[in-house]
Amino acid sequence: STLSSSSAASDVYKRQRIASEHWAGRRVWIIGASSGIGEALARQLLVMGAYVVLSARRREPLDALAGVFGQARVLPLDASDRGQWRAAAAEAQSVYGGLDLVVFVAGRYEPQRAWELDTERVRASFELNVLSVYDGLAQVLPQLIEQGSGGVMLVASVSGYTGLPKALAYGPTKAALINLAESLYFDLAPLGVSVYLVNPGFVATPMTRGNDFPMPGLVSPAEAAQAMVKGMAEGRFEIRFPKRFTWAMRLLSRVPYRWRFGLLHRMTGL
Image (cartoon, rainbow, N blue to C red; front, top):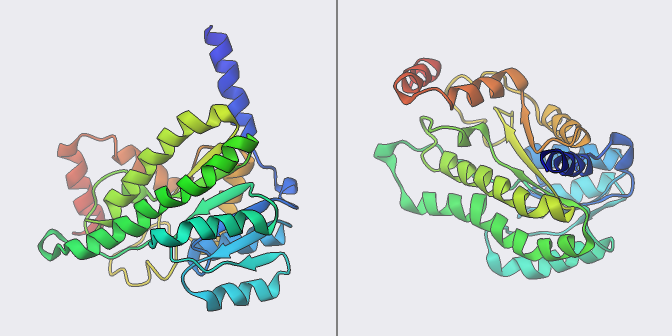
């Protein structure tokens, strides 16, 4: 029985693998493709021959990217507006006759400390970072489950591993995505639908540009995209980068609080 369970788990793991040479012709929808990690991943997959539907609130950057790659299509979407999801998902699924991967990367980051607590900003963070993912999943999962293939990718953050200074809203939203991805894996992997959880460290994007503290292990969006493609090729559920920093954060999240808080204070100076 144990051997059978182990074999089944191995089969699920193998189904998650998307080798580099197998991206040609795959149909991908990226929500949050106008800048940062989303744009870089779109470029990487388009270069590798994938057909990509590009979504974000701002149309201009999407048009510019689609102008370079003939197999890209633009689908403007305000992910935080739940009323737009049904029509957007229907169009995304019809453009290339289905979807093989849906990437949820749209996100909001605003540093906050306890004495700056603004519930409207917190609510906006949860609307985009968490609730919009649920809205999108509700629209795309039925088709993926019916076809018994394809996958979803949720871009969270190592900020979801543990509480951090200035991450009063951002950290909890990413912790929610980590838990959501883990729960999705239990349900979807046995049905043939892959689930990828991406936990980046610091990436040089418009969101991190305003940080006024050291960002160890800072990587470029292109490096982030390469790590994501590599992680899918290896069939990993959790894809995290850069390795040294994210492993340190993962280990730190397991350290007892009486030591963890002191270490984080020394690391961040906050």
